[in-house]
Length: 336
Ligand SMILES: NC(=O)C1=CN([C@@H]2O[C@H](COP(=O)(O)OP(=O)(O)OC[C@H]3O[C@@H](n4cnc5c(N)ncnc54)[C@H](OP(=O)(O)O)[C@@H]3O)[C@@H](O)[C@H]2O)C=CC1
Ligand SMILES: CC1=C(/C=C/C(C)=C/C=C/C(C)=C/C=O)C(C)(C)CCC1
Image (cartoon, rainbow, N blue to C red; front, side, top):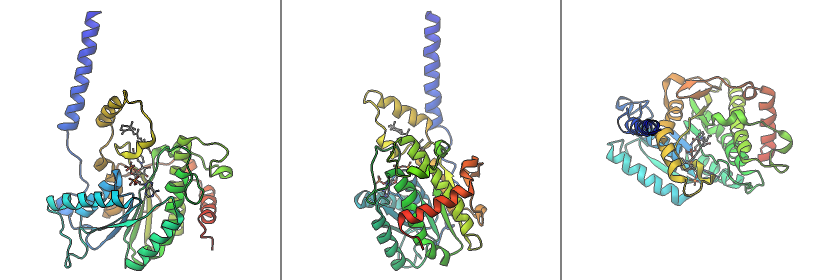
């Protein structure tokens, strides 16, 4: 008995040491582009939704470092300005490009208000973009909400479907002209592996008959993939590409609606610290699809860890993708 207890304690201690060593001594993030690529994104304007937190913030930081001009589309201007201030300080400390009159926009960070839970806000944002921005080279549909209680957007859509899919659907459609006139340009869509558990039930897209927060998140992420594939088809020959990715499991604020008992929280924090990716690790595929010459001309594909991955048949169903597109047009009011 005593031997078993000692063995269990030793195993636990060994495991803890291994995890700590992995975090502290292991290679820090394998950055996609080292310093030799620090001008890769010079002259390019990138719009990132939800760039004040998590993956969006890390993506913004890295693309700024590569010389992009980054527009942060965020719903809370106070949180966004705070994040922008930190990003500018970090860039200066790292010796990144200094924005100024002669920098051609390199390293410049702009904050704009965008609430994807309001079609009015999306329209106002796009109008401002079209008035103020002469070009848009990369659009990163990153913002997302995860497993919230049943809530509706300003326009009466179930919140996860409304923000993760419909808000981005309208945003992308209204910015397509600018992306086309800036071609070659790219659209990057952040989905999730959890798409596998979703289905597009056209009879109840607003989840009024029943609401399951996990299913609705998965459905919104499946919609992200179907949207990407249908858009890629529609964009053939335009030199505007669109690809979709899953980032893995990443330690961000996405879990804000998951309620964990106070006493168990430290354990969850420890587990996430040990096993989840950091935001910079998780953002690598977004950064890759936004900037790498390797994916020039590649469109309609699904990526994880900077490599193309296979999709389940339900995410490649062209008739479902077309029907979802048509219904989304009606829902957001852009039916021609
Ligand atoms: N973290 C993970 O393990 C995984 C994440 N993903 C996906 O990654 C993407 C980024 O999430 P992540 O960085 O993890 O989470 P965070 O919660 O850290 O970031 C989400 C961002 O989306 C913004 N957002 C939420 N609702 C709206 C809205 N109505 N209008 C505009 N912006 C909004 C948030 O703004 P605010 O800060 O104001 O709330 C925040 O900036 C999401 O699409 C998510 O589904 C996919 C798989 C796994
Ligand atoms: C980090 C973290 C949490 C967990 C978040 C989780 C589990 C997020 C998972 C998101 C996924 C897998 C999204 C996929 O699309 C807690 C427990 C809320 C609180 C402690 C810190």
